[in-house]
Image (cartoon, helix red, strand yellow):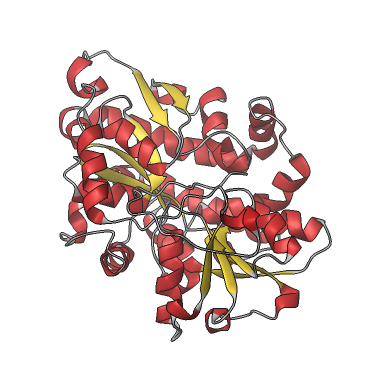
Length: 388
């Protein structure tokens, strides 16, 4: 599965990193992103296209678009394909066109610019766009973070402080590398003591196997599964465990919330039903998804399925408030972290960025679905809902 590599964060002044392994950096773009460059990039993209629902919609308009943050390459987007094909939104009188994109920033900008009505995107990309003036609103939490530092167990790396003096690969854009630095700092280590290496997206597994790097900052479920199926024991230092930040979010434009709340209500209900279908009719969803994904590796995807399901709920929140609820404490913590790593200039109050109104309108249903996820994980997959 190709991880979400674009987190709303633009490259700026190139730096040069040298290494004895040319594959790591010979064709990689080494970057030092800055907020100023990001704002310039955003300014060029904002408002390029007039809004779909916001400006063109009639009262009987029932078709909307939903933009995914990357392509169909694994089971991560199966919930949406299954939801569309198995009628989750149709039951709420919405015709949903599900689209793919090249990353979180692209997905969020498509909503900001009016090309699409809804999207899912990594929260750093969304908050950065809002910080730059984009009128976006977070409607729900899609998944918890699943990024971390992947190592082979033979390296003996088992804590964030063990990364001092070792070579760790990270992609030359995105926010995960900066989050890893924040995690090291929070655990009492020094990120400057790590030998950071820019790596090509998709090359990190082979580089780990070759010993060219000791660890890699990346989305870990499929990577770890492939390594372990090949006979290698692994160790993961999850970013979410240390930083307690939010992950991918469901978003729309504020004008759609203001002018067409009934559309948002129906979309969120369908979104909840899609998640219900994902947990209650998993095989049917996979059958739909298999036909849409080239070279679908069902062995790997079945192996990671429990973690993907676990990533869909945050039990400490969702079992009380409902699937997709945005907890203000975690939003506050996420904003603080993004300010610390210079992704935001000065965060507004947490409530500025999201609304729980639409989850609350279907709260009984949202809690019921969260409970079903928790029960299924424990009974059918024998893992705790807190596994991610």
